[in-house]
Length: 233
View 1 (cartoon, rainbow, N blue to C red):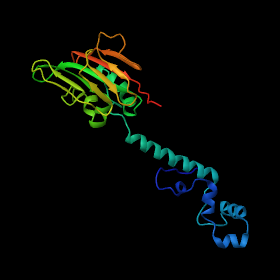
View 2 (view 1 turned 135 degrees about the vertical axis):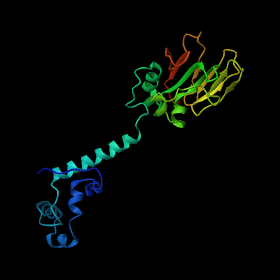
View 3 (view 1 turned 60 degrees about the vertical axis):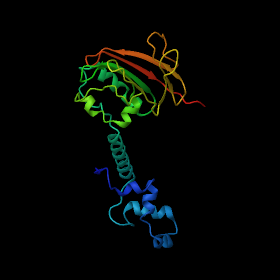
View 4 (view 1 turned 30 degrees about the horizontal axis):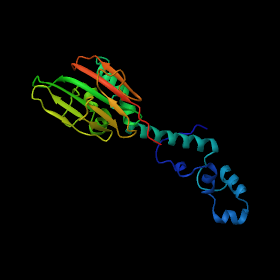
């Protein structure tokens, strides 16, 4: 018999096993007269006890699996990535952000984005951005829809306006900023305490860190430092 399966409100979700479902339809009076729980379960399954048409074991399992799939799909829908379904093929920069979005959201990766660009006044600005932190504090849909362009801000890890000489630095939940260093600007990952050296003259930016330069039309220069963090034991 074909069973209609739906995601919500099905009574089978209350029971972990088919036997529990059968037991729910057995009355104390049934057990008193039958004196055998297995026999009582068989009578319920055959339709001689309980209320309404009982579910067969296969029907129960099918409905239970459908309900679980429904809950899973609903949970995944709430965690949909901002880049999902967006046409970003025109922008190598947005494609790079999309490739790293999920890993930065789930903590497997912490990416530092260096952007050198011009603001709306035509002034040259640059900054280092904690991508994972921005994802948690900002809606990225407009960026992946190309309605907005990602820009450095004075609230980012590091910001510099080349015309006004405005310079700021701010720690984030993921990185500590080490600005007073003779080797230049450094960032320390707060999870594994590894140092990321963003000096372009350095051949290696640090342990478990890679440097990728992105050529795009939106900005003068974009460099992404991807750090795989490993918590200390």
